[in-house]
Image 1 (cartoon, rainbow over the protein chains, first blue to last red):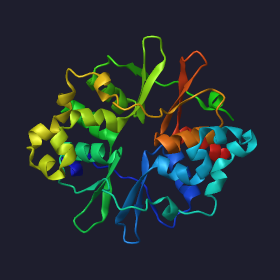
Image 2: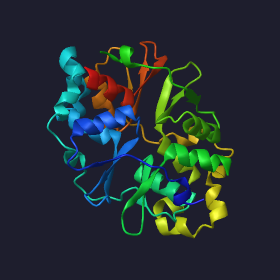
Image 3: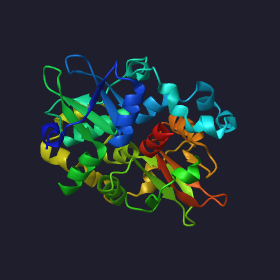
Image 4: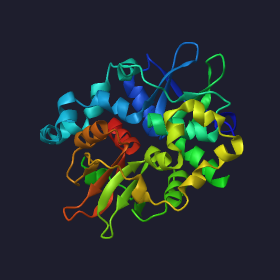
Length: 148
Length: 148
């Protein structure tokens, strides 16, 4: 059982996708994260949903729970409007870190190790030329491994 | 819009639940994580799926991707068997850290800030007596906030 046997199609966004559209994709398709590809369809990053959320939540609310509480309910309900005009590019992390991206030949254990190490419930699978083949989710991986 | 309006029923496990059963629950119900409750139904912890996975992946494979690759395919396919005999207790983090747990009166923005801060796509909602009311997922929160 290799990544090529576990992979499934997965929607993608680009760095220029509006952040609000990315949020809608996460919500409507109940995705665990987003795969950001470049113009050639090669993955640039894999973003957990919480990273997109960070863009919508003012920094002072992230740092101090008490400050989030004093924002009135009307404004609190509409917090995602803060995403307006922003793009996925602004969600990308600054520091280069290991990305949850692997090749079609990776074994189930390799994918699990990659998810555990990067704490990502989503791994992108890319061909040798860097093009995205699809993704393996933690739920699919566990499901298949429990049958093995 | 408060946590009480966004909350939905969510399956729970206890610290004594076998880890393999927890993995099955994650896979079959496609959960973003698990809520661990005590004997009185009070949340002890909220575990991301990757934390459960860490228990099944040998430490040397988590640290070194090259070592995960040399494990033969048959063993790699059956990595989840390493969960056998272990319980959810062993998945719980050692260090006390802020848990993604809130009260029914939290606003949408507070929940979003909590998810962003704890990097958890799942927030448990508890009554004043500590009992679990249910959970809010990142997908549900974004979906409702996008309608607001």
